[in-house]
Image (tube, rainbow, N blue to C red; front, side, top):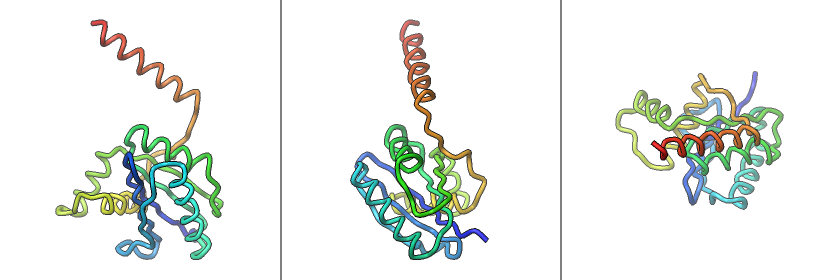
Length: 159
């Protein structure tokens, strides 16, 4: 039976608030911490996650982030393609923020709105299943996306 670690990350311009859940206990997080939203911060996140993997013997890591533009994209890029974790199976999922908001409303009507709570809800959403396709970084795709968006704005400005 797989032993996954669910890591919800609430990303902002200055920091990433992290909540880690195991398969066994959803209410009490295995770990909560905050790291800076920069390269040293993401490297610290990697070290802390690797310590949890070693201590608890996880064989799978699921990272979840709300898609908040460039802040979450850079974090997802590092998690998916640049960092090495002590685990054979690592997936990164990007959620539409409205999906997390509805998940929160459907489970807790009076849930607080803060970074710690949001990180927990992202991890709980990972744990609940029904996940989107894992994040995949592709430089040609990003270049095409930027070109398409630039063209859209030029056409819109010309009318």
